[in-house]
Image 1 (spheres, one colour):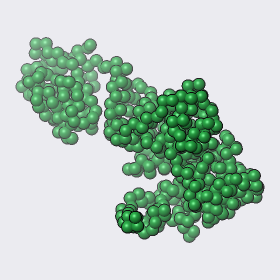
Image 2 (cartoon, rainbow, N blue to C red):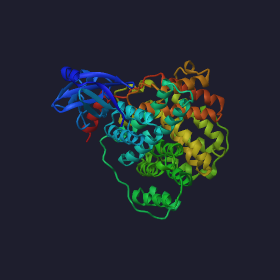
Image 3 (tube, helix red, strand yellow):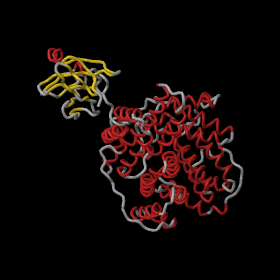
Image 4 (cartoon, rainbow, N blue to C red):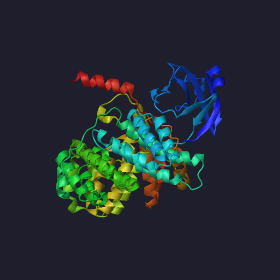
Length: 528
């Protein structure tokens, strides 16, 4: 302990409080019925001066800006969240001495992690940022915080993997770009934002949710049995197989073929399953084996709960065409060959060309990009119509992000190309009803692809979107298109992807449909 003289007790007693500056710190002293107390002058909430606060009950300090309250005797935060730094006090005659010794690093890290968990449980976005900053200053690995949050939250997602997990690896990719050696305040902030966004989104998706526990059974892993358990929607059996695989030391790379097969077994959940498989693998690669079990448990649950949309009337032809894949031809196709086709027509056209998967992929990617570029914006403002016709920008971004997942998964496991290509065709056909064939597409052309994508990645650091789901789709779409461009697509496809992204980022996105919701609710209830 190292004590530093902080002033005269007689002067403090006369004034009741005093501000001192010691070793670069602003410290406020209070003299009350329960003794002399010393704490940081800056409120841990937003930094307002506690010297201007009031002391009641002998030791309860209130910050008058936002009514946060601190017990200076126990150290508890009574109203608010963040902990207030206090300093041990000794009185020697008329002199006040303070111990300014910094806590050990391990203690600082443990305290910040405990405080972070409180912030995550309440989804306190600003506090999450502050606690991550405290961890950084304490010398902790900032990625360890994300690992811990994944462990805390993974079993609070009722239906498994969410967009928060899917966006996290893209946020980490962005973070790595700003982790430069010559750090300054701007670059430090740029590396903090992706962590705050990732953890904040995980906190939001689990806010006030209970734990949905996974089964504890362990069974010998068999890939075929694992996929069959998912197909049968038997979570306990699938989880026991997964636990058996992990107990035997299997990694995600070992398990990915089965997950990819299960995810693409159906045109499922608007493409989320395949996207989640890709992104889960990327997140495990970024964070290491510590997150393998929680992420794969969540992924297993999400595929089990995914909607099987190929069982819907609109998409039943998918199974018919898949069963005829042996007939697949190699007819050359272009993106515009698919534009305007119904689901059934798009599936048949894919069958005619699917024997050349790389070329067919480019055409379908281009068609989905064209749909993105020509989405009929007027549909977002429509207040009439059936629930089945509710559509927004986010429906169109999935055609591209799903395609990106197909390229990665089917590129690794070519036996899955039939499913991947046909499901891309389902996206093309389902969205074609909602495009504007007279849309002005030329004005959205991007002339400098590299500068455009670089600027939009930088813009993500201050995206301004209140809803995580909107920011998440921006992140995923930007990074998926950047990834597709790096894979050197047909130049025309690349141009359409960039133009579609440009229009998406610079056009209205209506998220609350009050009148439409009211009308549809009344119509629905009236027909019951």
